[in-house]
Amino acid sequence: MHHRTGIVSRGVSILMLAQLSAVALPAQAEDFQACVAGLKSTALRAGIAPAVVRRALDIAEPKQKVLRLSKIQPEFRTPIWDYMAFLVDDQRIADGKAVIRKHAVSLARAEQRYGVDRYVIAAVWGIETDYGRTTGRNFLPHALSTLACRGGRRAAFWRRELIAALTIVSNGDLPLDKLYGSWAGAFGQTQFMPSTYRRLAVDLDGDGKKDLVDSIPDALGSTANYLRRAGWIAGHPRLIEVRVPADYAGPEGRRRKFSLNDWAVRGIRRTDGRLLKGSRRAGLLLPAGRHGPAFLVFRNFDAVYAYNHAESYALAIMHLADRLAGGGSFKTRWPTDDPGISRAQRLQLQKLLITRGYDIGEADGKIGKRSRAAIRQAERKLGLKVTGRAGLRIYQALGGK
Ligand code: CA
Image (cartoon, rainbow, N blue to C red):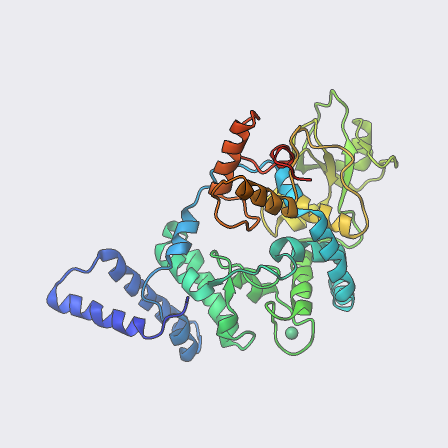
């Protein structure tokens, strides 16, 4: 579906015909074909095997889905408690514990070689692709060409990612038909961008190839290598849940680091009752303000942040890792009377909406526009506050357990 044969040669001839007869093609189609031709030259100059270039860039038109997705501005801001409930749910914890047992040898090897905690490696895998279940269905050369030729200011970035992707194939690490991933080019078990793959992928299983698509050991080892290069320090904490005094007005934020002793002086206390002390430096993270859960985060939090620049993401990874290692849920509740729900509950919520006659298409667990519209209608009908959120209140009001 992503890979069309025979179209580019036709495209070129249409282009020539257009030039000869001076019949104007729609400028965009012509521009796109000229741009792809330019990408081919660039790829050949970069030393990519001609056969790989031919097969990968046999593309006549931009991929509409990629263009659409690249323009979407999230119209719905996800509260942190929804984000966390979705990413760190019972299913992901149970699945994670199972994969940690199943891949114990690879995780131990990755941990030993790169000094990165196995629970964090597993958590990245679990959150990026649900432990390899959802790695993305976009053919990367097509998606990246679309972005390179229509990506505006970032065209050079996408072009470099495209060349990196083709280099991975050209140098024998992966066959071309394994290059499927997100619309923005992240792929494999732990969703590396092609340039990151080129820089940091490792061959942990020792078969001579760096395969982050089908080799779980390679993917786990590469994730560990990434985190180590991002500054992971072996043996340092993931995060510490704390309480802040009600009248706290001191510094906060991941970057404003002070020693644990300093935090203790400022009245910060661990929620597990242990003493906060030592010279190790941490920042105070208040993801939902002063009345929600609070955390001291260390250098290793920054290393995870480097993977996907969002503090909520790093928090989800560290918390999932804690849970996989046997830790419990947060001691402080999120400051809301309508908490987030798990993936299983989201799916059930959709089924409940369908049962009540709301047209949301098929229940797939993904809360999109139609699900949110149906939730708003149901909330209105039930006399609840209208939020359009898949939260616990509407879930329970519709009979969810
Ligand atoms: Ca390998």
